[in-house]
Amino acid sequence: MSKTDFIVDKENLEVSIIRTFNATPERMWQAFTDPEEIVQWWADTHIDKHEFEVGGSWRYVSSGNGQEFGFRGEFKEIDEPKKIVRTFEFEPKAGHIMTESITFEPQPDGKTKMVNVSKYENIEDL
Image 1 (spheres, rainbow, N blue to C red):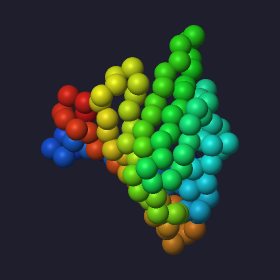
Image 2 (spheres, one colour; image 1 turned 90 degrees about the vertical axis):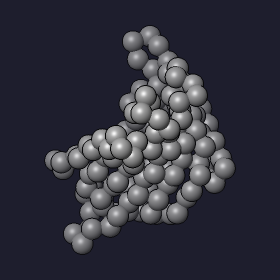
Image 3 (tube, helix red, strand yellow; image 1 turned 180 degrees about the horizontal axis):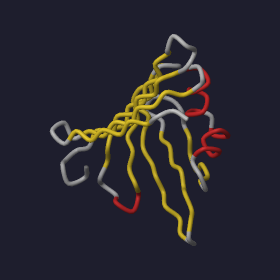
Image 4 (cartoon, rainbow, N blue to C red; image 1 turned 60 degrees about the vertical axis):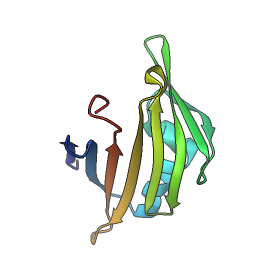
């Protein structure tokens, strides 16, 4: 199993998650953009809205322990199969919005390095 790096950069208000997957960038893109695939790896979640275009909105609802939690945002940049930029808001903490940038970097061995950087608005939200 591949190692996951989790980096908190308080100075720049960022959290980065970096991991190499045994899949091509195109396959990773599909897993992150196809609603039928998203629900397979985002446990106990259904997709309420998924307008996958720049300016389009998304909303996913996760459930567990008899509760539901909504997550929502807007797609800001789409560069297939390299990069997705979207806003991300956890509805129970409405108003605390981060910007998430996910890049898929091809590796020489046919794998893909995923770099997910979440940029927060302030240190309290980090």
